Image 1 (tube, helix red, strand yellow):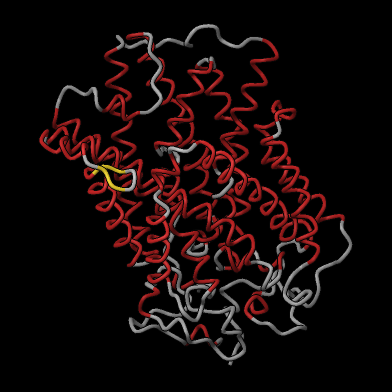
Image 2 (cartoon, helix red, strand yellow):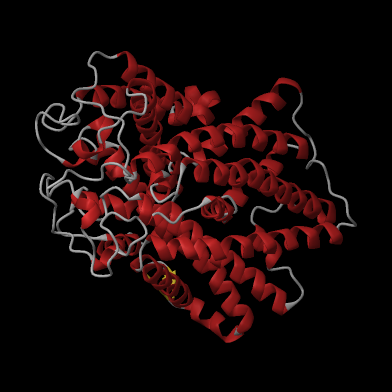
Length: 512
């Protein structure tokens, strides 16, 4: 029996059981044979007996994330750009199939090894080099955590004005670019998310399991209500639809951009699937949560956009606009609360967990899951995200530029794991600085990964932002991913050390 299998926190939960609240464990204690700079209970592989994510939990993750306000804004914008109903549906069918494959491959890595993304990236980048992709992913997530909290607080502010019109006067006073009402709403939702994360992944799992069905039912009811208002028919396009080659190109570009939206999630999906009971749980959850759920999402999008355009010739850009038009105050409150619950769920999954693991990975002796969650939340507050959101330059160039690195990182991690190592990983070596270990490389950094990352990221950034390459800008993530994977595969240098086919069930951390 390994050390990790016998160690436990104060609640008796085995060390490395992914759903355990890390707050009950001492982050400064490392097991014999591991490096204290690489190991903490939160980074340890989850044990099979400690895993609680089934197919339904994986489905509810997508049931929340797919239906985020940002995703609706993107999809409704396709109708405004001239894409017809059938073109939008075709784009989502194509994207969902591609995402199903990518996220299943990424998810299997988590369920097999039981490790979070910062540890997973040590396989390709080295035990020290892995800090680079983890920090990039975490930095992007912190910024979007703040922005998404701000967007949810805007819905809450509108709801408060509806229920208590006197609160509108609070919008006349501002501090650091946000009104008094905005501060009240933002801090309230900020505290709710900090509280949820402080109880660990188990409470996050329970929250999204309850939120998903409530959100799906609410959005379906909203679509049916709009369909009925439009006399049970919708406009098939907003006028001047694309034809011929332009039509095909826009379908492909829309599908590519939808994949790019999940360019962050495909990287750290293992943060969640490390708690999956089996690969089958990942496969079934993804099957229902991605192709089926995304088609459901696309159906709601075309009904909302087509019905609104038929009613008054106006193209909506956000479902919140429809919610605010609901004549019944009671139903308006329910719908607004559903959107707030949804945005919080999406934020927790996509933008909170990643920086938490990044910080624990940076300071394993100082931070555990709860403390890292608090630090992440504070960072998301002090950057004043409403000012970031209101600056297109920051959102497009800074966050977009960082995001351009994520495709190449994904290409390198996937090429190394699936093509070069063929899913054979020596998990104990992920936690040691022994120069002879498999992932020590050169002083803990794999030069091969860095050599592939830099030019691929540069090309991806160029494709995304250089005006002369604007025709291909929608495909920048794919360009960076494929180029990095190709470079990493053909560059000299092979995996070193033993490559036992080991997962978290058989070996968690080195034995004492």
